[in-house]
Amino acid sequence: MFTRNSDSENSKSSNNDDNTSSRAKPIEDAPKQAGSSRETVISNDLTIHGNVTSEGIVRLEGTIIGDMNCTSLVVENDGSISGNISAKEVKVHGRVGGTVHGANVMLHSSAFVEGDIYHQGISIEMGTHYDGRLKWVDSAEEGEKLSNKTRQPIGNDNQLHAQAAE
Image 1 (tube, one colour):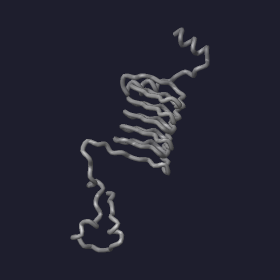
Image 2: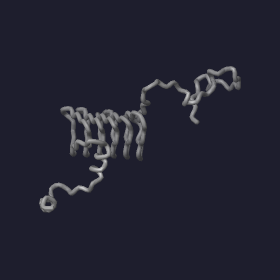
Image 3: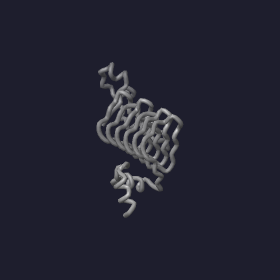
Image 4: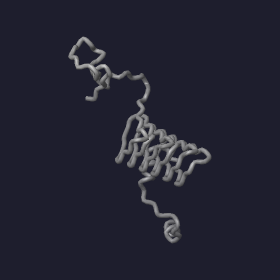
């Protein structure tokens, strides 16, 4: 179990049980606000190689090389993710390279996004760099199915005509 140590405990080497303020307290006993979601901050000095899953809000100031699955994601100006995103709410100020699945997606003017976006509502500010396809979906499951389909590359007229004839 992780514990939180007070500064006074670090400077004392006393075993006095009567002094409860200087004992280590379990992190799980930290005060919780009713009805609020926890926020996780991935700071700008951190790079994660691998997939990240959270049941709460994630504020990305650092770098993730892998997929992100959470309730709400905010990619800050210095934040970047090279992988797919799946969240109910996605706000991008920084860089994203990968497919985005979100009920509500907001691309701010400082955003640089390369990848398809499957959404139920989207907002794109003037000045956003966006290269990909936008697709309205009725549900997250529909978006997952569509993004997993194999697609033919655009630009080969013979393949396009052959698909249209079928």
